[in-house]
Image (cartoon, rainbow, N blue to C red; front, side, top):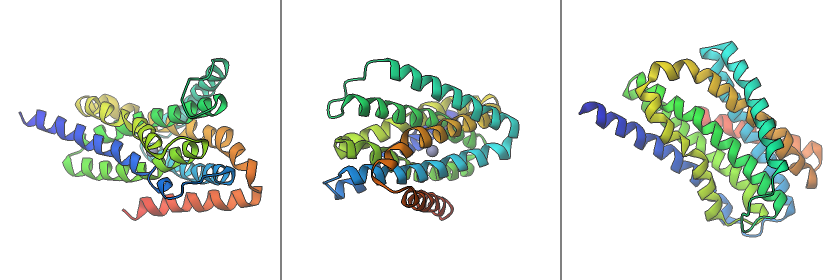
Length: 246
Ligand SMILES: [Zn+2]
């Protein structure tokens, strides 16, 4: 019986990490008129947040197994590039408020963030294998780091005309792999522990590609390169401060 309770606890903990992602969209409810300039500024902020998240993923992976992490980064790049080529060739999905180009961009961003949640779901499950205390610590860390990631997603979607509530929904969606993967990762902790560095690297490789291929071109539309640099570094710093202060 004790095992069932724990599995349920792992699931609930990881579910909470998914829900906190939606909180990240809420600041955008405050400013209703998000114009072109916000589209660029939002992209620059999202770029800094995602670079910092990638840094943390790589740092964690490297501490466990260096070569597996690097192999993960290379694989992440290949997969995200192939996914991008695939999406470009398709007709755009019909996402009510968004035009075709924006719908494709949304698909890439939500897709990459959802894929990176798989690695974090493994992280939650595996950490519970190290005991309840470690599990709770990692869960809390991931839950809090999901908030700026939700913000990063909303910063891309809301300036393109999506409602804040729907953007929050997509942010939560991007984190749903966390509760789904955490449970098997906890049950088969040894197997998942060995592939975790690969997953962390894979997530980071895909996210770094996205920063340069999808976010910086948006930032460049309305902002000077020097200004973008300032915003990116500030966003990076904020994310790191956020992570060490919890
Ligand atoms: Zn993350």
